[in-house]
Structure formats: structure tokens, C-alpha cells
Image (cartoon, rainbow, N blue to C red; front, top):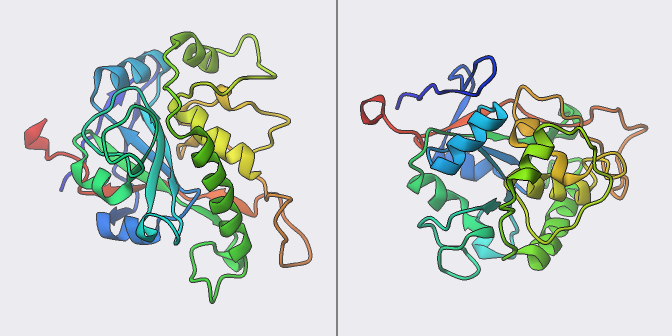
Length: 261
């Protein structure tokens, strides 16, 4: 399966590169855990408007939620979208717009856009989040993320998509930085940032969720994460970069053959 390289934006070219590690759908679902980032390049009109207006390579970002006690322990995609599409929400069993929760594997198998990539939430090798729980030196961190996300999903699932383009443009061109915001509606990266702020991975005193666009979560960004102070740390000290996101790992085969383009 060949990757589709797409060039977007009103500003200097930023291609979606194939020069990264890749996962099969099965492997992606196996390693996916709460807090991992999913980057998406779609072909819808709304997606094209976003990337052209905001000069981004990824049109959409979502976050993984995986709870062994819910939805058969399968990884789910927590996201905010404008259009319903065809994929059923795991809570309502029907297509939904706005803030929704989808089965991750089903989403990947039905995907018809350009590309999908994951960025795994990880730590220093000594504190690897993706080892089995019997080996993991920091299992409380992943449990903390799952528990906070469960509360967020219970409270905000079904909220509408943020249709005001002024909100998205304000995030791209922050001439008037925001200090407060309401959460009656979400655009995609706002929802992901909202989860990270509430989990404690992003400092909510310095950042507001509506100031984040998808490119803040891609591999070329400068997003710095912090270790949540609510979670006990095993060790003598916490370095500033103990928690981070991996590079972009493309998922095969969620992209079309070049012959189909």
C-alpha cells in the first residue's frame, strides 16, 4: 500500500511524508492506549478549507480512549467532527456529529481519506508507558489518564461541533490571546487539548484549549508536555521531558492506492 503525499496550505509547503515508521491496523489497535494522539488527513470540503486556511498538513486530530471495563476493552477514537459520516458512535450505535466516540479499528478499516498516523504518549525508556502492566514502572499514569478521560466523555459526549470559523482563525492568528473560554462546543484540536489540560499533561494556567490547532500535535510541533503532579512518580526526580509524544507512525492500509487518487 503506497502512501499519498499531499501538499497543502497557503504558506511554504509541508508535505505528509512517508519517511516514518508504520503500523498495520492490527498493531495500531494493539498498542493504542488512552492519551495517544491520532492525526488525520481527510478529503472532505471542510478538511480542505481547514488546511488551506490554516496552512496545515493534517486536517484533523483525535485522541485514543481505552478502558478495559468499557466497550470490550477496545480502543476508541474520541473526537469532535462537523459531519456525521457513516461510522456509528459506540454509545448511541448510530452516526453522530459533534463530540463522539468511535471504535478505533472500525474507523481505520472504513477510512477513505489521505492518511492516518499515531503519536504514542510515552516516557523516558526507564518509565515506558507501553510495556505490560506487570513490567510498567508507571501504570498509575496511564490509569490516571483513562479515569480523567472517562469523566470528560461522560460529561461532554454529544456536545456540538464548534461551527464558528472565527474561533479556528483566532487559534491560528492569536492577536488577542485568550485567558478564559466556555465549553459548549468544540473543534477537534480544542477537544484534544482540553483532555490534555484536564489530565495535567498541558499546563492549564498557561494555555487555553481553544488556542490549539491540529498542527500543535503533529511531529513538527514544539508541544512540551509535563508530568501530571496528581500522579505519584517512582524515582528520585522528574525531568522536564519525562513525558512526550513519539514520532508520527503511519497506519496501513488506511490510505488509498495512488491509482485511486
